[in-house]
Structure formats: C-alpha cells, structure tokens
Image (cartoon, rainbow, N blue to C red; front, side):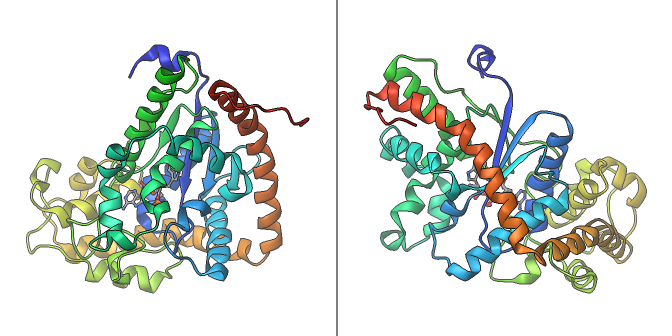
Length: 345
Ligand code: TYM
C-alpha cells in the first residue's frame, strides 16, 4: 500500500451490506459492530444498504422493501446514528450505477473470471446467472470510489473484491494519467472476520445457507439462540488452555471466537476462563452472553420497524447527503474520461 496514494485523500470510511434476507451474527460481528466502533472513533463514516447488489439474484419486491427497512433498523439498533454516519440505500444515489458502468469498461473479463464469490454463487449454473452477478464487483468498486473512500471495513469474504477495487482505481489512474481515485485499504480486523456455520466449521455463517440452524439471526429470540448454540456441532474434547491448541478444531475455535467477539475480549482470555471445561458448560455460557448482547438490539429493531415511514425518511435524508458527496466526484470522473457534461445543475 503506497502512503502517497492515500495522503492526497482525507480518511473516509465506506461499507455496505446487502438487504437480502436477514442479518446474521456473522454480519453483526464481522461488520455492523465494527461499523459502530469506527463511527465512535470520530472518522467520517458512510454506510450503504446495497439494494442494487441484492437484485443480482432474484428478489421478491415486497420482501426486498421489507428487508431494506429491517436492515436500516438493524444498523440503528446496533448503534449507527444517522446524524453522525451517513446511512442510506444504494438505489437512491444514482452515482453508484453510473460509475459502475464506467468501471464495467475499466475492469477486464479476466479479473472478474477470477472472483471466487461469483463461482460460489453461480455454482454449476453459470450460463443462467445474471450478468449483474458477474459484474457485481465493479459496482462494489463504484460504491467505494464514488466517495473517494480510503478505508473499507469488511469480513474476510470481501477481501478479493477489495483487491479488485484497488486494481480498478490503479488502472483508471494509469489509463487517464491522473491521480484521481484513492487506492483503498481493506480493514479486516478482529477475531470475527470469518464467523463460521454452527453446523460445519469449514463453511462461513451465511444468510443463504439452507439450514437455519447453521446461523444465528439478529431476529432470533432467546430460546432459539440457546437451542442453536446447544445443537452447534463440536468435538468431544474439553476446551484447551491456549488458542494455539484450537488448531484443527474448527468448530471449537469458531465458538471461542464468537464468545471473544461478543465479550470484546480475546480468545486467550476466553480460554483462560473456560480452558479444561466441556461444551456442556461453555455452550450455555455462550448462549447467555449472545442473548444478553443481542436481545436489546432485537427489541430496538422491532420498535423501529413499527414506524417504516420514519425509516424511509431517514434513508432519504441520508441519500441526499450521500448524493451531495458523490455527485462532484462522478462529474470529475466523467470529465477526465472526456464526456461532455453541459447541463446546468
Ligand atoms: P454481505 O451483505 O454479504 O455482508 C455484509 C458484511 O458482513 C460480512 N460478513 C461476515 N463477516 C464475518 N463472518 C461472516 N460469516 C460474515 N458474513 C458476512 C461481510 O464480509 C461484509 O462486510 N459485497 C458486499 C456488500 C458491498 C460492500 C460494498 C461492502 C457492496 N458494496 C462496498 C463494502 C464496500 C456483500 O455482499 O456483503
């Protein structure tokens, strides 16, 4: 990472979450919780509900609308303050799609062919995947670069997309002989950058997993959370005394990491307390901790969802602020590319 590339750009954080299905504990620990910490650090923060990304796979319109509002409620319930962070849904700011098109013309087919997430999501049915699903990482680059964002907090699974964002910024700057787009810094930090499925320690926790028992949803009630942790797959050994001894025990490590992330501590500290004990003790303790942390978020989400008009108003106001930042950057990009831009704005 060259410091000179960043030095010209003031620190600005951007990240996005898809409003497809509900929020999982993976989204919460890998993204939302960290978004709140970043907001609290005083950096300028922009958070986007990426509805244009969601439609790369079929979304039932009424469900998408509901999921977008519920996601907005989840952000606010987790601690995002729309007065301090910009919170909005992507389709209300047209700059994203416009810059995304330009990046379709910058990125190379070969780059996108290497994206593992496309391969995973399209599966064996590549011929039938939408063009949008293939070009998705270009839109993601546009989300970030239309704000000249410098730092992007995400979970581990987004790393490759952020590398592509850097490649797009560098190629644009090179092709047009400018130092226009910042080369973004992925921020993949903490113990919960890859929360794994509760049924299979080799798979990430995901809202698209067919088994609901594989994940904790932010909308799960206390009894469901307790049941899911009780049934979580583990091995018969007691917990070890040190994190290194979790090597080769993916399920055990996942539960320890989840505990550490929820308790704002380290796996070492968790094992100092629970090392030598069996899952019969650890799982109920983990469930109690998760319920204590998630129940207030859950309740606040329900309260906010009772007034969808207020959520929509907040998203509209956030989109106005986002558009005001994005518009001049989009205009400057089109200018660099040689587009005539002569409308009186
Ligand atoms: P999405 O909606 O799949 O996930 C949102 C965020 O949650 C993180 N995450 C996880 N972290 C830890 N463990 C897990 N099991 C887990 N599952 C999900 C993701 O890494 C992500 O940070 N392409 C993005 C959305 C996006 C975006 C952007 C992100 C669109 N434009 C611009 C950053 C910047 C996505 O599908 O995330």
